[in-house]
Length: 114
Length: 111
Image 1 (tube, each protein chain N blue to C red):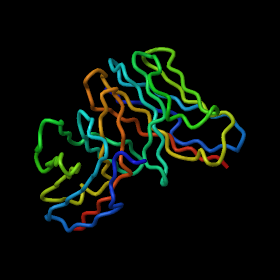
Image 2 (cartoon, each protein chain N blue to C red):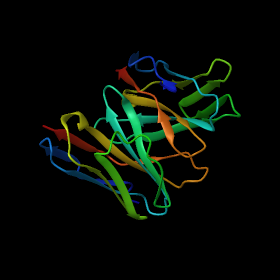
Image 3 (tube, helix red, strand yellow):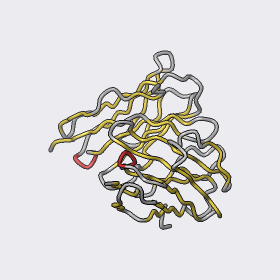
Image 4 (cartoon, one colour):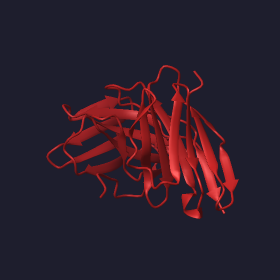
């Protein structure tokens, strides 16, 4: 199994540009999570999906952030327009859902907004 | 308001000795606590968990203790090895399915 796949691994962009982060969960997993890691706030949940449906998006910082999961094998996190304070490492994770508490994380996307 | 608190940002231990990582929580409504380990430039990986009905869970060199009255849990690594050097996150599993993470403790095991 390839594990959770994220792309790109690194992204450098200028303030105001649109950024799209991509995630492919582990096959057979029906829950998908987007996290952001910063020095100040640690690892915080942005949004999670269960069976492709967003369940809790209360962690999404503001309207500039949006996430979609059009099918069971793909999700995107979009920031438009991006700002320097969005610079962070963004992780995607998946789990089998239900009572399973173990989440499997991707390698992360390191985003730098100049 | 931090629901899961790891008050020590870093810990340094000599190889072969015991490492003790601590975590405090505020919300008594939980199913599981989990510990994740993270190396630089990688995503966190699951290490060990404990359910609310237990006070100890052991897996090889790793043992997690849960003290519900004190709302405290700890991860013991014995003996510590240089390869254990990483950031360790405590996480609380909520019934809705998501995890609430602490800010992590960076463990350095010196040869």
